[in-house]
Image (cartoon, rainbow, N blue to C red):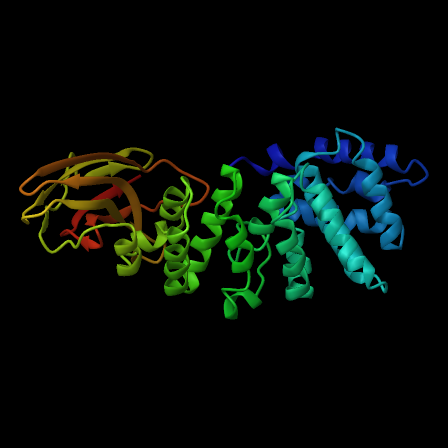
Length: 366
């Protein structure tokens, strides 16, 4: 993941201020101009919030006047990219604070206009929390838009577990709330939109696995050429969790006749930043060919001394009766932004169609 300074930097806020001055030269934009003073101490979301708050100070008091400025700025091609995250957030808050009921719909319309320059998926969460059904009704209409970016916004902005975005608690009790949107988009011509649909259904699978499997099964009854691949991506978490419905839906066999050997390690000691090199042997001991989804499970050392499993994809294979497969992998322990590594005992195992091999222990050392 890129660093915050690569996405929403002091320079990008200066560029934003320049765009707004061109759109509304009568306003000073002084708060936005100085909002970056503490950027070095802030993460990406915090940067977006502090610029949003500065814009709310600098903008006119009425939503209509603020929206007019943002629409004027859209005439400038430089008004684009990550600088628009705080713009969308500010526009949403302005619209929802307005006493004019029509500003709710206009605020959503403005987000749809902005989303082609930078996705409004974060800003729409404010509307969802204010009035879920009213916002979903607008998103259903977006799903029929000629604009690919707007169609993607309909799916991506309503994801139950959208990364980096504020939560929408209503989705916890209503995981099916946005399914009418997905039903309109799962056969979309755009791969970007289809991928968003798959990620959305994957989010749903974490809350209601049966609903996700039923939805995917229904889509596979009326597919296009891309539907099977999209469904496989949507079912990825359930496959890693060895959900029987997802495995059966994707045609993976029972693991009853599959022999899964414990992995063999090149070394039982791995240096921090190094690689764990291993291989494993899988044999189809049954009388029929078997379709297999092969994963591996790393039990990571946590800060409190306990182990936590994490499943990683390895491959998908078909094995004939009696066929033997050797799988090999190099697993990195280099530092990454999404996981902190800790020295100490770890464990590794293979997982085939939900069945796991015996684990093998190894140590990560500083």
